[in-house]
Image (cartoon, rainbow, N blue to C red; front, side):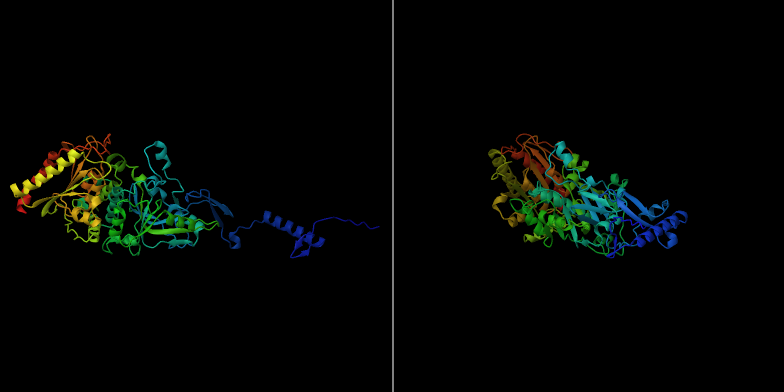
Length: 566
């Protein structure tokens, strides 16, 4: 009698054919045999002619420095040197992933070689993140600023703002999808809060950029370094580039004469209207000083961000080979701006001065190229200024320009003070020209800027020896005065008020500066503390005309002997 067993087993399919009972028994016997061999006779990967495979899993997506190794094979101890551990793997093309380095850095101003951007995050490609400045001294979260503790904390940068990444992680994320943005770039991280103001845009933002950019590519002159700075390590250029490289930063090596051009400015968080002031001087300056420079705005930057934000595992990145990152909030995190001057440009100016790279410190020689470009754009003769310290020329005529704000809406003199000041100035000019018959001749212009074209304003300013007026935007024109031994700015404040704006800027260009409170005056180093009393912004500022005249005559008489020889 035969016994038939019917077992209901699922069909096993291999290449479309069902397996028989015989096939299944052979598979089980073979698997058991291989298991016994593996247990009693282990075979190393090396014995099979295979290399141990290593997979690096980054447990911190943004850091690029903390990685966990999972090895497929026999574990071993890492005993190689730090240099060997950090070298770029041989299968990576270093030319596609050049490491990031810093040429110069001051809080709020950082000049990078090879800065990356992907999905809105700026990446520093390096295996040595501890050798870089604090990220909070380089950048911030861009937003309107106020002095509240909540706002200050909210502007602190995160890993989405800027982060470090190593080459292995960059290769894994971007592979061969890194695209170079040719040329030299300025990245502005500021919102529009201060940009729609002539002073803050030209005399602070671009003033600082020019000091830093010009200084970075000027040769260091040891004898111009202040004694107090010589003992400090001011040089961030810790990663020198191959001297045979064609990298644009090689301008600083001297093979290429002159200062490299700025090819583009990107206002990452500002609309096209966000940096244009109502009188139109911001755009006039930018097109005059940098006629070939392209300008991108927030929407353009977001286009770049969106282009690198892919839904696939493979990302993209833009590579900026030479980039100056400018950040107002970062600058205020240092005492030079935050406590001493409240001027972000002071960070750039002071750093380059301490580096011995600020050309023509006493004549504003580093600012000279932009001053001349703007004057030439206005159809005026460029100034010729010696780069040698202490060689400021004497003026051929002493032009006193009073910038009146009487037609404006605020920060005006009282009607009586304005009339008294104009009368006192007219009497001064008459007396010096007719009674004393001084040489050079005196001249007075009462300038109402809103009634003049930009070319007409610059024509007056370029000849001005003494510029005076109430604290306000018009005094920004001091940037385009011709440097002379008598060049001075006289700033009229509501009594008790003081701000560093034009005081610091005048002195940074080697000019004199005097503040006036009605019938008293003061100057460096005896200026008062910063204060904004009631009346500072109003239209009832008093001033005693004879006191202003006394200040002017003191300036002129101080140089009387030199003028007689002239």
